[in-house]
Length: 244
Image (cartoon, rainbow, N blue to C red):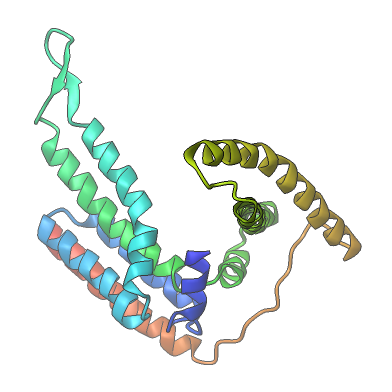
């Protein structure tokens, strides 16, 4: 929900999705080609500032969305510090530090490129772009259904929490644990029922296996593509210059 709300309130909401995707793709390629920490720092700074200053994504939303993948990256880097020695015993090793540094910096840059795209582009626009790129319709429909089910689960969770709170279900630690157990047990049933209702509503609208959205016109798409190409060329120039 935070990602989608940020996308709809972004300053780049009316920018052509192809232009934003081109900019993000250039960031991915540049991050893959770069080698030095300085180049990675420049690329990451460009991508982050483009989202925060250019698209006006709120800082707290950006940080909130970035924290889970950053936590996963930190955990992955920590596990790479452990390895077997000559005797087969697992100990902390420093031989992987250069590799860890390179992977972490590259991941930071690629994450910034991905966040710049998803935090400024609503799902219907992404689906329209993927459909133009000949993405299989089955994959697009699965994306929409999974996305919709997230909202269904969130609504069921919020309503259950509100009902339990109104009945003083969290008045003490014991009651809170009991309410949490009941909530976990009821979530599967509620989500199943709401998913069935969603399928019934789709069948009532003569759903034939393809979900369609009204296309959006972008009058300045050509200019926006040119700007994205220039910015992407700058990032690629930084990465290629770093390899020379």
